[in-house]
Amino acid sequence: MLFSVIALTITLYKVWQYSALGVWRYNTPAKYLSELGKGKAIASRIQASRHPVVKVMATALDHNANIKPDSPLLREEIQRVAAEQLQSLRAMLKPLELIAALSPLLGLLGTVLGMITAFQQLESLGSQVDPSALSGGIWQALLTTAVGLIVAIPALIAHNWFERTIEICGHHMGDSVTRLFTTQPS
Image (cartoon, rainbow, N blue to C red; front, side, top):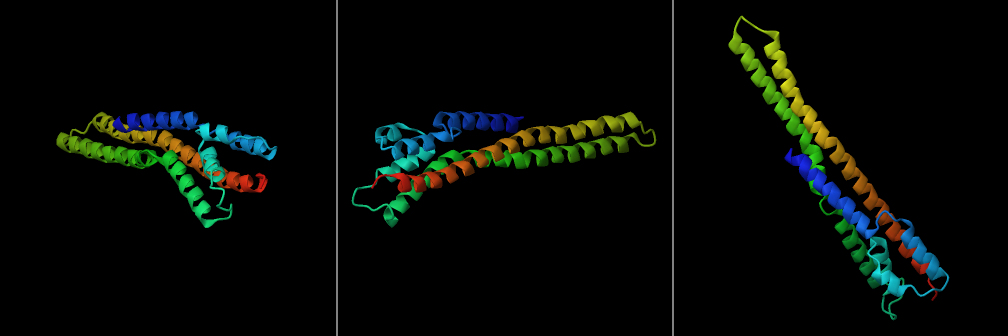
């Protein structure tokens, strides 16, 4: 029960975080690149954006005039900001992954313990074995595995969805910075 509450809380928090940052608006960086390619001044709007890809673009745009675009220093700074943005998106995903992995195992443990209890009851009955006593214990034992899977499956789906979103975001970071330097007027 506790795992399901924690998994739901993390999932809702991450959905809120990604929505607030605009992570799922994949066209935002392309829109800025298009405007920049047309010679429009977008520096102030880029600075105001919370989108992780746009934050990396802002770092690339803000480089000092005496640093060349192919400078190792600029490349290092862009990589640092990109890693920082991606790490912010990854925060809290490890506990979600752990819940997805542990829930079925805890359910299975409950099943094993329940089966032990059912067989102990069967043993205590001696020669007057009642199949209903055994079947009642078995279904209760199997219930813990079902609950573990009910918690684990949505947690695993959410974790993979967030990881894929981060992967896409990372790709867009690299692509946008490359396009920024190839479309930016010198």
